[in-house]
Length: 499
Ligand code: ADP
Image (tube, rainbow, N blue to C red; front, side, top):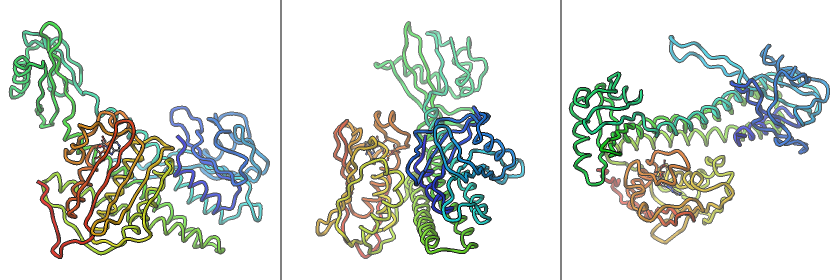
């Protein structure tokens, strides 16, 4: 899927190296073809639509250059006009291998160095030729491209993993005489008995848990019963038993909601931190190389923009880390603490809008807010409130719909509000959101990955400020999430018990 981060990256590359166009292709690990990720043509005549997947052993000058660049791991320059798929580009055309390099994380592991794609630059403006400085720059930039490409692949893999995390891990069918008729491999690994088929439950049951589950099932009116199953190794699973035809019972094991939430939290945090970190590292490396060159006025502007973005992204990392620490405090039943200061909420709003630029750029964002509004509170946590509302709006509403963010001055109180035209929430579910850790509506589960902790954090942070959270929503139409916060905080730091 073409990504907006890579598109912006290509724009920057074309600007820094002064070419008319830049493109980034991922090398498919499975099919050994090039897949276009982003194409920028400042001349405006080419677009990503013109370029399909490219066979790299095709007999075209471009494919030949790609093979040579990947083989020699060096940039190759073509001095003639070239066709890249259906796209015609003007010389000089530079084909740069994108090599992913990573040091071994521990002595038992090997370091990684493998080609993951190709960057192409064409029509050098100014002198019309690439020079030494350009080569140095493209080398640095291709390392950044590698990080971004790998990041993108990991993101896709993460989505697939998240989908699998919810699949039942084990299934068994138990006959009325408590003999196991059928069991899958996953059930055997949960129960840690192989084979299970033909055995009686009492003979394989660790601490009598399954026997108890089955007797509860047979006593239940709904023909259903659930329990938490702890395996021999101490892993917890959710076990659910269901009555089937002719007195048979089906037992399904899934990872327990808590294990899943905890695992997913770690995954989500690592994931969330990777994007800002990639941007920070890439920008700083580029600036470092640029500082060795003769700089023009335009270069200074680029450096300023790059360092500015790095600063914004590093403050985002700090906030995400704090948010995670606070979520684990909430899990542990501890209090949330505020670092109160006086600050301009509009300034905070500007900051989060910049940080989330990439996530919100497919929606139509409308902003209704005064020019300035001072309040007392924990600035970072107030930004987190807006962050969570906006991220969810982008996640649970289709691209091209409108997201409205409002900041209102009510005299003694400040309202922070985000409205979307998304999937909405069923009426009976509204009061659970932010109150039950891990709660997610069925529609949202089918729509996007998530762990159901962001709103719990948002509600707690709102309440820790002495404020209240409100949700208005209509299924299929959209939602409004709102935090109403007092403008002043008591002189003693306020803290709210989370138990
Ligand atoms: P997550 O998004 O990780 O599941 P949150 O705590 O942020 O967790 O949200 C909890 C649940 O609230 C979501 O799973 C979803 O069901 C619902 N929700 C939150 N924001 C929205 C929204 N803007 N539109 C529809 N549903 C939402």
